[in-house]
Length: 245
Ligand code: FPP
Image (tube, rainbow, N blue to C red; front, side):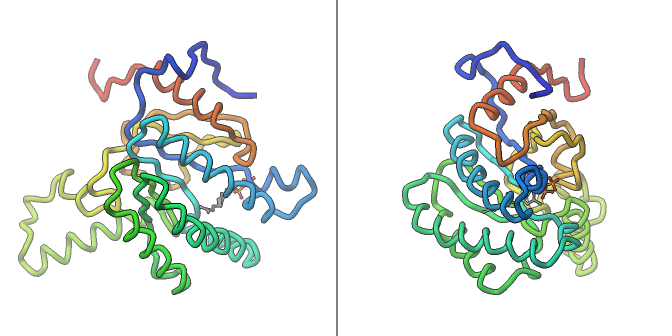
């Protein structure tokens, strides 16, 4: 059962988040409940990802970031890591054809240097193929960690200070933002995490400073477009103050 309840219908939602972050959690538990290997949960999870990404675009969201693989997920069994990488590979190949039909800009956030060369190449092709689209930005977070992102940004800033192209006095919030993967994107308005876990898990930690959170009990492989609409309705009912009154 969902932890939130809303009397609003999706058609009444007036305030759509500009940037939504989605933590696709619960694949393993979904599979276990059915006596299936964890990988089966990721297979269904990847299908749900496709459906929900398209629904985000349909709802007028400008940026949707999906947490696919974290810097900490390398601790999982190799078999499970391979399964997730294969799903990504399949998705990229299939969607390179599909991209022509969609008006979605695909981007990847995270350190791609640790990924297989063919996946890195497909990611590059996907970004190139969709660079001129005008619709939603779809960020796929892969080998992503919020702390690692900040460390990378700080190293880049320090290098500029060292070579004399950046005055340390000019390092402000805007300067840090410019060095993040999400440099040209709005900050996160809404984080959505299904599966009954109430954590951010190192996802977009800088960008979430004033994000709203909607948690849900549903496991990701069971998540539907209606669940997304419910979460958007809850978000639309929130009163955001950004530190003001
Ligand atoms: C978290 O659930 C899920 C992941 C770490 C992987 C998410 C990956 C996918 C949905 C596949 C993505 C594929 C594409 C094409 C983008 P969990 O495994 O931690 O679940 P649990 O908490 O129930 O064990």
